[in-house]
Image (cartoon, rainbow, N blue to C red; front, top):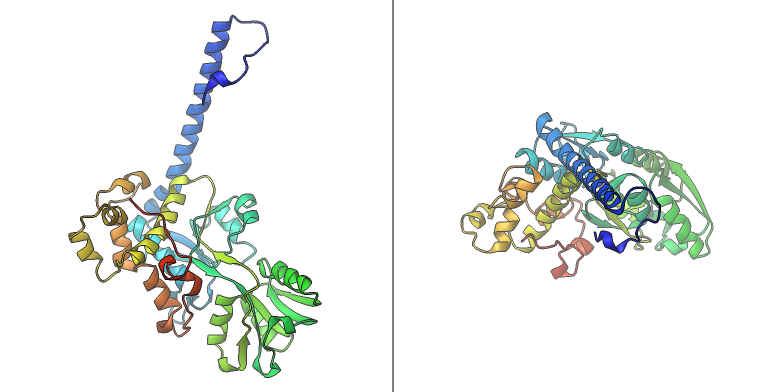
Length: 359
């Protein structure tokens, strides 16, 4: 900051030199206070997680492919695997995670209040949320879009045929406003039936209380796959919105924000470089390029700033995999959902997945 760029004070009193010294002293004190606050905030979550020995991760818990607990208590899904990646970066243990199911209307409050360290709950990144909720989105884990599901027996083939429909939607989501805008834009009437969560919205829809069910397409695919007769339901082809889903942390902790963001980028760039859980040890042993050494943090440069052990990138990929591995086992053909990569393919394959270089 160039202090000479500001006009001099015209008030009278102390000599000019004394006033100048006072101004410089006040400026230095303010700068010191700012740096102290930033340092205090930056150290918070990493130290808390390390001291606790477990990462508290807020998840949905109802969406197959994103976050779901089976009858044996095992959690699976893209969101839950991302939580495991972050736990590995901090604690070197993908199982050191406490999954905390949270509802759509309380999800930001639990982050702000420190009840969870990280929210990975198929949550759409919007400007209003990012600016006003006291939270920060660390990136995009999954590019989604809102769609509609209808009974196949109705022969409805397009969302443009839903004029006058009663549509079941989830409270606290972006789906309600998106549906209203879509119907208004296409001059169709709409009746929205709002439900507290996906389970209740789906039950109302399957009981015939609604003409259609609307939500993120990933949720619709997961729901349909779990039905006794998946073929009886049709997901209409239109995506009526942009739904970039990403992990969320509370504002004011830059170190934690950086760690979560760069864990995500590490997963994405590892896939681009062809490094996966099966070959990462070999890549480490023979790493000569600066991009691979930086990705795996073999020199400990980023670990020092993040407050964790060196080679954290190597540990994350070895124990959890790269982004393609996470997607494949949770959403791809191996998962039974067979969701296509689409927008979630690497940028070099026509998708939007792109990470800044680690070097």
